[in-house]
Length: 551
Image (cartoon, rainbow, N blue to C red; front, side, top):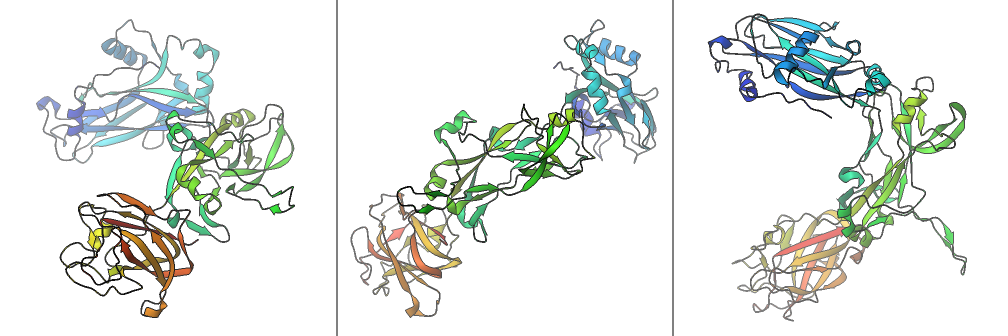
């Protein structure tokens, strides 16, 4: 598309001139200076389905004497105005610009009157701007623009709406006194609001998902269909799973982690044993609705489909998609880019099946408009679950064995490798069996399964090797603690090195939910027994992350 190039030498100056408290940056002859705010070359989208499209125009007055009266005239350029503009700014023989048919647009003044010219008087210091609206008759413009006559000229000519600001008596900024509007002739097309060019992986924490009664943890992605123009009709758009389960690669940069289609499993019967293998629903579209089915333009029946509903006046609607994370392998969630491919359906070539169900069959656009709204396309909604640690600090964690001269409990949870926890080595604390040297954790939520990630101290590391795990729901009852697992760190960690004790799919599980947890270090990585008061035996860590859930 051709573009005009309008000088902007005083643009920054004029912007400053229109601030509320600075009027004295001009010479005497510029007691009052007027301009079109955000003038110059602009694009404006107009849709073939709309009756009209509006763009607001603001005219402002600056200068060092704001109390002065000033006269302004904002108008669609006359042929004489336009010819002078071309001669002064482009060259008198330039013929590459044409003016849009004047019957297709108007200026709307403050009283709602349609006109081509607005006169305004700035009356004093508190009168600093006035506004107008450029109103384009959208559908009529699109018909005009698509006519054979206009199309034949487009190879050599760009059509614009030229608007200028003039005054016979006062100063107008010569660098910011025009608005040259190029109209973009568009058909409305419903698109999917998915980032990254149609591919979206949402990382989320399993612990922070909502639980749906009877269906476990459920994720409802915030993915939307969007209509770019007005919606006077009210309708629903059919969406579906592609017939082919092949998932295309949308972006080369994603190939390092291949996309994996998130499949649902139908109920099957094992041929050898006759045992029924139940269906597994990993995702589903949750809104169904009847659609009108067309052959040519005649109604022939109805069919059921999944829909995204656009009530009249709504231009953005959420896709009714649920993903059931408890039915997905945890390793897949952590290590693969799982995607649900969804199709915005179009009419088929043979039956011309309508992909839209109208709220009011008597209020819908013509078939030509319907064809522009829907373009059959596949987009992807992705999910990648990550585990986030339970929030811990020294307000909810205590120890029977914290060295008073160095280190602290807080150092375990601050993501700082220069801080650390150290068990007692100057004081012989009570570390009798069976608990040894332990951390006692009051959990912010009840869980029944855990795993850990530990990071060795950056200097003189001595990490836990054998950890017994106990739970309780009665903090004041020492006899209530129940051992439910022994976790082992089989790796002697170097300075600052991390190690995962347990995994997302191999958590240490208790037989019931619990509120309190003891992390009991029984042996360090030197093989020393921590169920001993000896100050020669100790352990330390830079970081401890606890992951937990109800499973």
